[in-house]
Image (cartoon, rainbow, N blue to C red; front, side):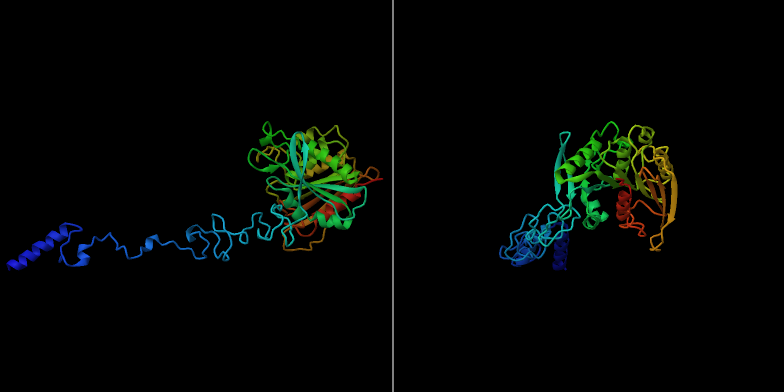
Length: 385
């Protein structure tokens, strides 16, 4: 009984004192603290895994399976695994490491789309210039302007004007807007939230660049035109109302004219104007925003804007045509209204995309027409010898 009590006492004592050797002193387990490891045993917690053997631990290696022997950066990526400019060609094969976003490249990562620099008003401005091989002297020139927060290389890609230029024989310039205080690339069309903040003179830049390209490349000053989407389309109306005679016609896609620009559109020479606009546009509403609900500035409805320019250009006839609904799945149809004057060539065309959104028809949105082809047809129709 005494022996039993002694054992019971030891058992209770051991339960009260942690990490106390309560067993036989000859037991190596009992004599060894539980948080101490034998020097001869590897500790799994300190093992560094490097599956591809590139010297970068798997936990920090963003490029798995690096080929053996290739030099890697701090993220475990080699030149064969990196694509710095995102053109689809790895850096080890890419001889053009600064391809423009969205541009089509060859197997060497090179494209024809290269930004050129033009200094205007102490700013180095950028543009993409495209000229088909063998272009004749005095060929037309078309400026194509991107939308707000977009870029020149993007509209070059989706508009498809280069392919049309190849077959029709004209040059194309894709000017690049500057960055506004919100961090978005833009053309200074006069929006309310830019007033008093953004002072860049885009109208002067576009006109001066056009004259430079006309002289440098032997292009026709009487057939220099401007088009653009959204913000680029809005700039077209600024050109029409505040510009000189550098641009002989403009074509806007999903654009609008600010009310204050419209109210002062009285002193310059009228020019031909085209608008392609979706009736369900939720960015530049077809019915306008005369109360400036969206903050861009007040602007009239598309119909009101077109009627203003048609009357200003002294139209004599109106032709309305419904285009065939060749794509019944796009949810929209096209009706054209062409206000013409038989003697002055100052046509005003409206392509009303019924059910269409904030789109460039033919590339996205309505697929019954190709906007770029229709715009080129419009520009051709406005040239009077």
